Length: 134
Image (cartoon, rainbow, N blue to C red; front, side, top):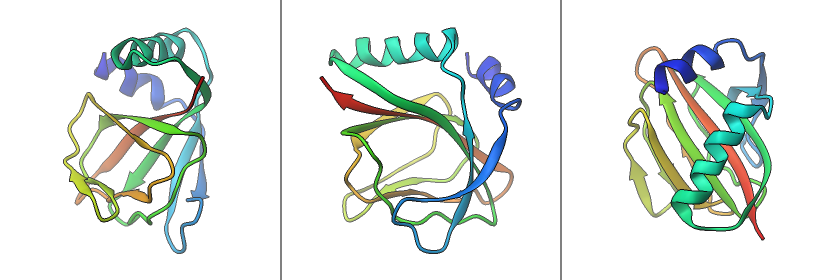
């Protein structure tokens, strides 16, 4: 599915954003329509987790090599981050560094400071599902 998803996300309109609580780094964020594909992916996430989740919003992040990440927090209770394309480790402050691997889904407490590190070359694309527990 990753190749299809990469093609799908290239048609998203990206806008420069700054992370909530971030100080210096900008990144490109694209609002993804909640369509049948996003509904399918979110349904799979809920089945994998076996949790009753409410989706707050879904969007994609695009980061280039000259766009270092800032530690920030997210809204909601849990962020489900799907690594679509590229490289650049993901970090949870004072806890762990997670290697970027295409088709990897990571879940974390939205209130823990975290950041995505810029790729050494090319771009880094992630798909973020912001959720709350029901």
